[in-house]
Length: 270
Image 1 (cartoon, one colour):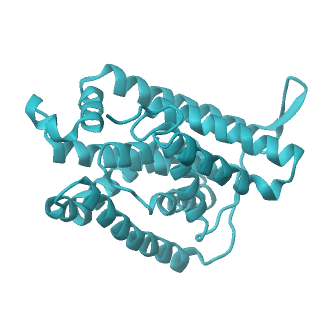
Image 2: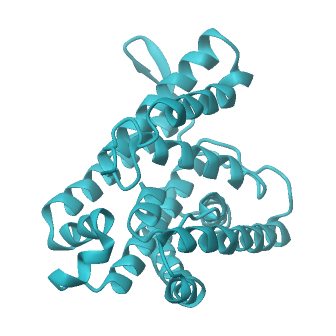
């Protein structure tokens, strides 16, 4: 959902998406291991910080690109190059602070029985929290005035100013909100998954697949595509080979690009 907002509304293809997610995971690790803070409390701290940081990134580093880009296609190319550079900056900072090893911490690792199958409590908590956040964001975007403005920007950015929407301010807000969701995801993932400074690219690639599968700017499609991808990866890992989950992910991605380039839940352009 974070990358959907950043790309679908702000028109920024953010290749540093996964790096900020990993940075948030390390921040949660620091809160838990050094300060003894519950990861859920860390989530309440990290998400607003992520919003502010991503807003500053947009205003300081990306706004000059927006001003000089003659069209959306040029902005997309420039944003890819710029965020590719940001990727290495964030990754380098994390490597300096924590090194290249894998990190994890113990939190609610006990199994919970669901319909006769054991599920780790931390994974269940992360999934439920992500679901609540996703539903809340979707409701706000559908029911609120801010949400209506964001959807207008996603559907017709060239005409948004005609109805009193400030495109630059709205794009900055969408990018920052997307960044807040990204760092929130990083905290949730850190509860159950070992992480390292160099694994952000994998998260970015999966996010790109989900955004394109769901249709650019389509939040509900993004949620459904993420659920579909998770089910496919689980089935492949369970019945075929865990090492083939990424192959299955990109196999689906190629099929979508070939058969339905606007996304499974997207609408074809006119």
